[in-house]
Each structure stands twice: as structure tokens, then as C-alpha cells.
Amino acid sequence: MNSDLVLECVDLQKKYQIGHSELCVFQDLQFALRAGEWISIVGASGSGKTTLLNLLGGLDNPSSGAVRWEGKSLNGVVEAALGQWRNRYLGVVYQFHHLLPEFTALENVAMPLWIRGIKKAEALQQAAAILEVVGLAARGDHKPAELSGGERQRVAIARALVGKPQVVLLDEPTGNLDYHTAMAIQALIADLNARLGIAFVVVTHDLSFAAKAQTQYRLHQGQLSLAQ
Image (tube, rainbow, N blue to C red; front, side, top):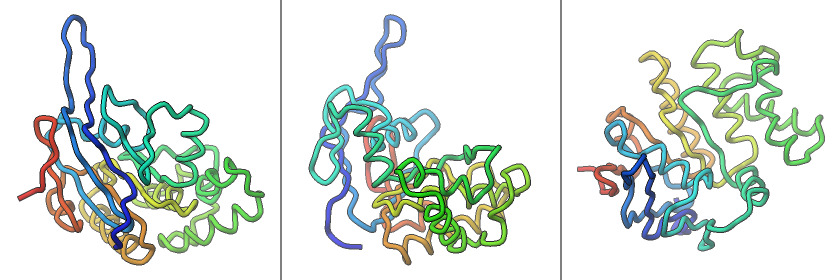
């Protein structure tokens, strides 16, 4: 890990209007992520963990304050430019893999590169290389329905990594897996962070998984604090 600040929140506030009431999810929230850092965020259901990830990824807009990428605010950036930024610099892994069922594992992993405009053959070559990194070199020709839950999540991780992003956001990446498969995915995430130097932000309910990160945060009543 180095000291370069990649992603930060400054005085972040998010409110939702529910009927005649207003729900404040965050108030003056501060957050900073440095290159290569692995942080975890834990919190009760409904505390706003997924909302925070959506804000960090430019998938939602704050009510006030700002999310900054390398010092530049994402506020007011048009969606097309945000899409290009996400494709180039950001990877996202969800609890449910969200793979495209009609495409093979290899094609699913190559998809972000095709969207970027990389030629098919080169994209497939890069996708095959990252599938090997996550231990699925022999499963590239299989469609998602032919893979186990753990294998599908490895494909999703490979898809997030294939574009060589600076940051990967993971929302409960092991929450839908059995214990042994979850342990294997957790070990893979730790290994990838150490080997590739990509920053990871992991939202999880699993306290033992959270404890493996370099920095652990707790989201409670709209504020992030270092976990005790």
C-alpha cells in the first residue's frame, strides 16, 4: 500500500424523501481510501452500507458533500463520463454475481473490455489470463448455470479485475455462499489485494472476514468509525 489518496468522501450527506418524512442516511460522513489499501465496512442491516458503495461508485448522487476521485469531485459529471470512469478505474462485485447467463465465463469476464472498445481476440486473451489468476482457467467455456456458486463469484471477481482497476467495491461478496466456499473467496480476495496492489472496499456482515482487512470501519447512525 502507498500513501496516494484515491477515493474520498467529504462532508457526505444522503437523504431520502419517504412520503412526508425525510430519512437521513448519512450526515457529514468522511472517508478516505489510499492506493492498494484493503478496508472493510460492517454495520447493521439498513445502516446504509450499500448506499455508501453506490455513492463511492458514482451510481447515486449525494444530497450534499462530495465523493472525490484523485481529488476531483464526481458531482455534476455526466453519466456517459461516469460510465467511462467506472469502466476504466473501478470494479464492482455484488453478493449475487449478476453474470449474463447466455455468455460463457470467458465472455462474461471479457465484457468490460469489449465495452471499452478492445478487440475481441485481445479481450478474450486478457480475460483468460485473469480467469487463471482466480483459479478458473479450465472453466472459461462454461456458462454460469454450469458453474457452482463459488465459481460464479470467482468469475464475477475476474470480471471486476480484468480492466486493471485502481479500486474494487465488493458488496457482501461471500454472503450467499456456504462456509467453505466463503472461506476460499475470502482467501482469494486477500491474495489478490497483496499480489495486484488493487484497493478493495468490502462491505460484509462477517466480522471475521472484516478483521482480515488492513483497516476496519463500522457504519452506525450515519457515521463511519474505526472498528474497535
